[in-house]
Image 1 (cartoon, one colour):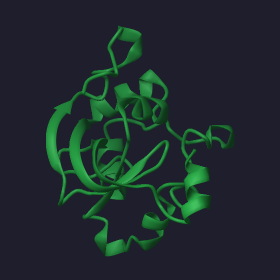
Image 2 (cartoon, helix red, strand yellow):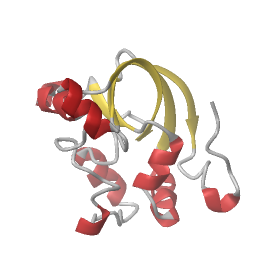
Image 3 (cartoon, rainbow, N blue to C red):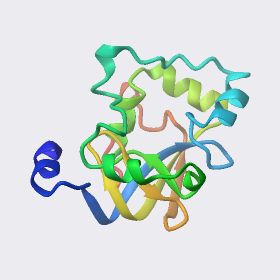
Image 4 (tube, rainbow, N blue to C red):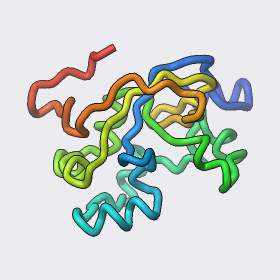
Length: 156
């Protein structure tokens, strides 16, 4: 669907407002931020080295329809403003698709944060939004909604 939108309109899928989810450390950095990766990996070994067959779970932002134009316009110094997240809890669980990965995030001190964001570039697997303009609604453990515990993703 996003390929069709991208081809028809030649741009990102930008929503005026959306609920989005982000995995972040106590200072707001995500797990791929190099300083966080170094600090947290001293306590926990992060196992998510993605193989080529997993690329559909983890598309590069430069290739994912719905967000690639916003990603291309991001500047290195604006990384504090524009951040990556997930369009749903289901997308988060598909991205970190092994329970031990989510447990590693929890052990390392990450939180799954629910935001109300504006001007969200929305892809199928990930989204980009301005943290400065977003309202933090709640924080959860990274394993809070794990399906193997019978937890639900429907938590509007």
